[in-house]
Image (cartoon, rainbow, N blue to C red; front, top):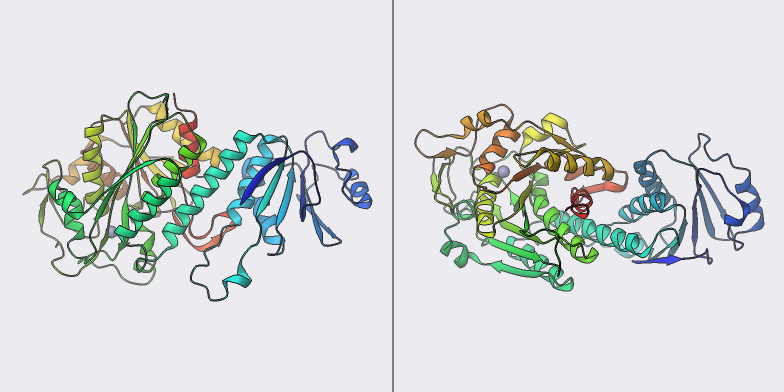
Length: 469
Ligand SMILES: [Zn+2]
């Protein structure tokens, strides 16, 4: 997809005008628009109730978007325009103010995403849009930001949508490495023998029931003059498929969508990709422990006691609480990097989904309140909402074991918080935990988020990191 800045409408297949507050002066209308269309627009009341007008004339498509109140409304209208346009349209011109155009473009481009790799008739289904031109109000920096974030979100959606028959832990590491190379990001993939040498007992235990080896991927983006002296470390849960292990999940409504259990990893890798493409002045390191969780072979069993990377022992009470085991090793590994801040993301608990549904993630942590607030604000700005939960120390009591140091299950209540407290135990730096089990994956299509992997969290984190200092 090519995104360009363009001073005027030049007969692209579709024309979109986002009307401004002041209404329309005749000079704003491109002379290339058909005369009768120009006359019609001038008669519009910019703030009446109908938000979108649509006309076609001589195989061209014209959209007029009335003044909206929020960025999200513009994103939703971007989705509406994409779904209204024929698949064969190749070029669109969008004219409007800087902020409105950005949000509208986001909605349009995210809606243009398709996952057709496994469709026999993909040629007929494919959107042919290849060029979006923005009026000069949207400068090159904003166009780069838009392209970088949409590319990263769509890459993350591809990863989540790929089934485990293709996307094993090894393949996932290869995909991250390939993408990293195109962006000048350093990538290192630790293979099973190296993971064994490091004694990452959590990652290795979860992998025991699988015939596919685990991987541990390290991505680093270090700009010339970073604003942070110590790196920000992003950790993502990379369970490429979760059967629950011996604590097997039921198939319908549960195991059938579990290819999405690496969405946290896709979010963090996507974030570093977008940051590098935007050339953000922030030093970032991403850690991705990856494996599938299966009940085969010598699978780890409820009742097992495992020794983690940093030496803590954990009594396994449920093999379906595997995410925290692989994350704990990666979080403990982050201590070696002396980070300024550690953020992790994981499709971690059903409790998070039961608490607030799919409309937001649960966020919690011991980082200072300003950081937590800024993350939640970034969630509102991007409509990737995140809700702050309490993180009191007494929640940790449930994670203690009588025969080992910790257990991996906790009690029946507030499971998203007790899971967070388990993870916090392994991190020395200020820490934030995102449980994205709700918004990461949608069974039914939902506006520009589509269906399947949503790529949740990348736009939120980019918004947050952009303003880091
Ligand atoms: Zn699980």
